Each structure stands twice: as C-alpha cells, then as structure tokens.
Length: 211
Ligand code: FOL
Image (cartoon, rainbow, N blue to C red; front, side, top):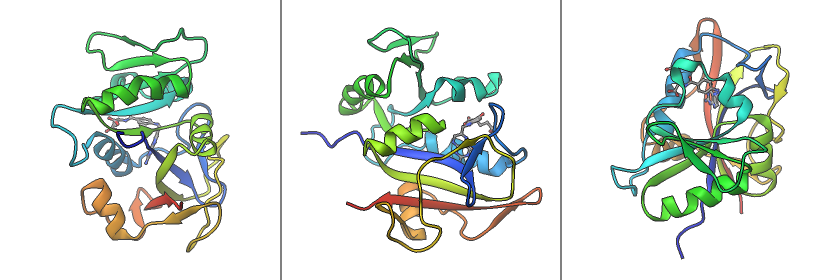
C-alpha cells in the first residue's frame, strides 16, 4: 500500500494569539523574505519525487481570494481550491490545468491521492485559512506544521485554532522539531533564531505530530 497522503500545514502566525489574517489579507506587510521562504518551500519537491512532479497547495476560497492576482495561481504548484457548492468530482480549470476546484477537503484529497501514487504530485501543503487548517488538524490529517512565529502585536481577525506549546514538548500531541529536522525536511539550511525584516521579528519552526 502506498504511504498515506500526509499533509503539511504552512503558516505564519503571531505569537500567543496565533493571528494569521486581517480583513481578508495578511496582518502584516513587508515580510518579503518570509514570503520567499513560503514560495521556495512549497515549490521544492521531496527527494523521492520525479523531477516532473509538482507539489500541491490546498487552500480555502478566501485564501485564494487573498493572494494578489498577479501571483495567482501560485506558480510551479498545483493549486487546489476548496469552495463549498462546487460540484463533485474536483475539476481542473484554466489553461495550464494547475488550478483545481474541490467541494471539500475530502474531495481535494481524493483527487490528489492517485496523482501522488502516480508520481505526478510530490508534497501536499495546506496553506490556509483557519477553517481548512482546523479541519486538517482535527481530523488527524496533518503530520507536520511549518510555522513562522511572528513576534509582533498585529491586529488580527483570523486565528490558527490549534494549540501548540510555546516551549519544549508535550501538549496536544505536537512536538517542535530541532533545527536539523527542519533543514533536512525542507531541503535547505533555514536560518535559526530571530529573523528581522522591517522592524518585525520572526522565527522559522517545524512541529511534528507525536504518534
Ligand atoms: N506561510 C508562511 N510561512 N507565510 C505566509 O505568508 C503564508 N501565507 C499564506 C499561507 N501560508 C503562509 C496565505 N497567504 C501569497 C500571498 C498570500 C498567501 C500565500 C501566498 C503569494 O503571493 N505567494 C507568492 C509569493 C509572491 C512573492 O514572492 O512575493 C508565491 O509564489 O508563493
């Protein structure tokens, strides 16, 4: 049997309150290197995937709307948009076929699983928003969280609902991976400690489900 389709959540969130959005957009501006990290990591194929494969990014409809039109669909990735009311089964749209609409997370995963088995899809990321992150975690579909902790008190109206401990391990079945684990999984040396951009600090973290 092929390995299960395990999901990686990727997000940037404020410390403590885990704010991820404001008014349909990101709560901050100007974290350009952080955004570049997101783009690089979501594009990079796992060592096991054929070079012709693409990673998939699953997102809710509001997250799709939040991406600036010029960056949509996210290049070099299979964009899967969950929008309720969309007919089942999921259907590709657009010229390149790099955009797929699905009515639910289950439909999205059902669409992706065979593509992964065929070596056409590499990694599968969930890129938001709160609702899709929450469902992926609650249903035990997420194995890994690539979290960028943003060290600032930004106003937010959308929050990551999963409780991760601030330090060390335990709690909620999630454990922070050491730097070697993060570097090894993402396939590059990720700078450790507090990064600074335009007066805002942030830290790249990886969390893995303990099971
Ligand atoms: N994860 C992390 N770590 N940071 C984020 O900002 C983030 N944002 C989302 C999901 N996970 C994240 C959702 N929001 C783009 C815009 C908003 C967005 C996700 C992606 C976007 O335009 N991405 C382009 C990069 C463009 C650039 O280089 O500025 C891409 O190609 O990925």
